[in-house]
Length: 186
Image (cartoon, rainbow, N blue to C red; front, side):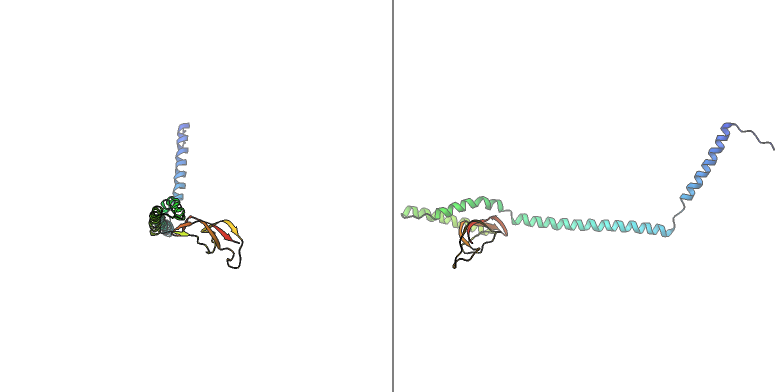
């Protein structure tokens, strides 16, 4: 029984073969098949995660749709705001023109024409839900009125009521286009 002498190259091959066998054994141990219960549990977790993502995405879509519908409603409701704001100075000028006293027939006819234009313009604004705010004697509301002056209150005029309207305010639906400039009793 004589042992054959191995060359150094053959010894390296034998060592490499033994290392490969050890690696395969370790890989086999690491890849032990999962039990059926583990697989089911893992799949149930994945399904629950996918369902959660689906429900969140669906809720986000509903929120976006309702937000979009609300924005559309607001856009339609207040579409005339810029136009109304640009027309208000003309309304103010017509009101000032109507305050002038006239005595002869020609100027009276002109004033009547201005009054017709004024009434038509006010009617058009009201058709589009633009309304004037700020009347003498009305309660002061800082949401709709801007106090320019204060006037001492007396027995006939309680505090925090409008004494004089210096410039009418206007609202479109429930949004203030321009606050009324008023003098308020204090």
